[in-house]
Length: 420
Ligand SMILES: Cc1cc2nc3c(=O)[nH]c(=O)nc-3n(C[C@H](O)[C@H](O)[C@H](O)COP(=O)(O)OP(=O)(O)OC[C@H]3O[C@@H](n4cnc5c(N)ncnc54)[C@H](O)[C@@H]3O)c2cc1C
Image 1 (cartoon, protein in one colour):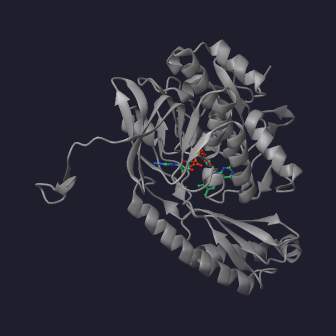
Image 2: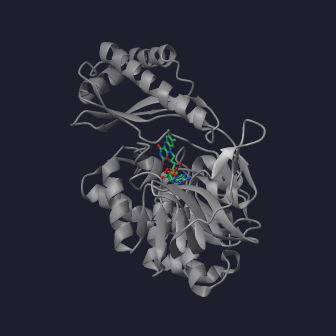
Image 3: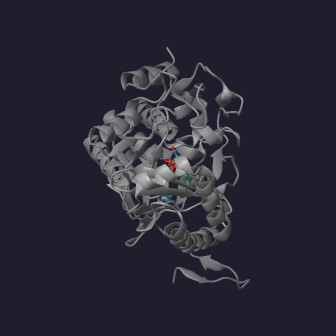
């Protein structure tokens, strides 16, 4: 027996056991969201052996499984901000007609299946080994260095050993288990969805001609369904009548499975009710039907690393924030006129070696996370983390000792945008 009831009645005891090593690699990317995918592609393109471990059966994270299908602008007032892998993904979807512009700067809606496919394709072309259906459950740590991760599968518990680990779980699972410092905060959690069969032209005409009535209907639905956070609709594919439902139910602890389950359950009931009300009252929605609800609950924030550098609200609110250790640029989806260097230190833990992070759990203060957590900036931090991990693994150095000029030169060579 490996587990037995513990002495106090509300614990179980676990016996020490040997866990089989399923794989060894140069770079282990934990989590296959936008950040993890970009990290894996970047590291693979540099010739590193890379494995992604992802709990679900697809890549793209919240941008695909979470149905977060609105991609903000990759530029700011003519200044290129996001290039490299992010731009490659966005442009490939535009070329195939699987992303459509939204009319705000160069932001677009995209087909989540297109991003799943592209993320997979670019990973495979870069030689990345993908392990789905594996739920990371702990970090392997030797002294002050992360050596890999433990994960749960249908085949039992297994371990992955690596020269470098990239925590792209979005929630900072690996750095937390490894004992790194972090901060955390909560934000409204939602469950995005898509509606089909909408007469978008009719809806748009109503919004133009009778904006107050349409706003009242949305307000009533918000109240009647008791959405604690935002509830907004956007026309994704006008001709096909596809509408995106972005929302937030309530602020909750994103690391508590009971809370997440409650939100999933409540959201599905509320979406159904909202659709009924839309059908009855909103012009253009009489024949609307629910295409899908997200398979991945919409967590906006949880843990943030305590890194070598911590982004502040002031940094990311500047017209042109510069930093000597820049590894890419970011913008702000809420407003134009913002561009900031992303310092390498936001990816590097203060105290632990063998580990980098990227995506929505990088080192920043609570306010600074708002512009940094969006998809296009996650691609940038992901590409930087994967590149740094590959270079560090190849040079046999800790990420914190990687010569920044080498990293910057490699990123420039990959087409990443720098201010000059
Ligand atoms: C409701 C909502 C609306 C949003 N709206 C927008 C928007 O309009 N535009 C925009 O750009 N951004 C938006 N965002 C933000 C954006 O979607 C995310 O911040 C971004 O996808 C984060 O990317 P990531 O790679 O850091 O993390 P994630 O996308 O969360 O990916 C993390 C990946 O790691 C995997 N993972 C996590 N833990 C484990 C584990 N223990 N074991 C194995 N795998 C694991 C997950 O399954 C997932 O695939 C929104 C977010 C939400 C929730």
